[in-house]
Length: 235
Image (cartoon, rainbow, N blue to C red; front, side, top):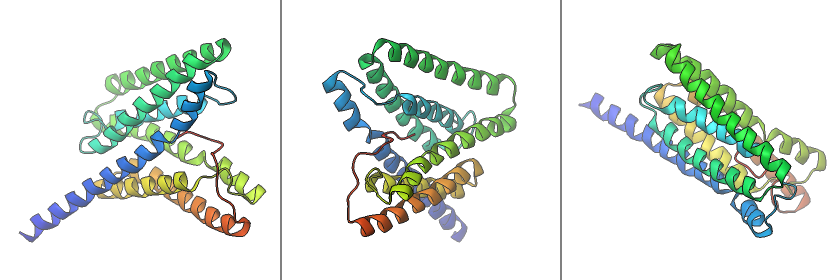
């Protein structure tokens, strides 16, 4: 009986961590909405780059594939968060393409097709060339590489904060959401005993802590608030 209760508590905590990660990730997914409202109003992409959204789409697709039962049974909450993320990124890219000038539009369309082609190759190769255990390893390593590079992208902003001694371009709520999402999925990965989940999110947790510490330090020194981020993307 005690073993059953322990297993039940363990399962509840695992699901709770995964759901929390989904909710905090949603905050990050919707964070570029003000940017795209501006693009729609002005009918121009102005100085904004669509590359972060293209990369974010590829990252979400790879992690979505890793979270499917055919690759990794029992981690469906990884699939759900990345399916939502993929939808948001595709919407942002579509808006960007519709409002971009011709040269940018052609480039973005090419990159979008390349993302779907690469994802198709990954799916085909993982299904045809690997058995189930090897398939999980193959897709898992790809997802780890993609996630760690995604979590490393704020290093640009961190470097800027240190150089300028200003948090002007590091919004607090984005840094907090990144930290909370990372630590939630780190816990989820630990509960599931899946290093392909807890390792990259452990890296994300550390970087999130660094961002928060820098924010509190430099905001107290300068007495300023953050504004719109330089990198307005989940990626």
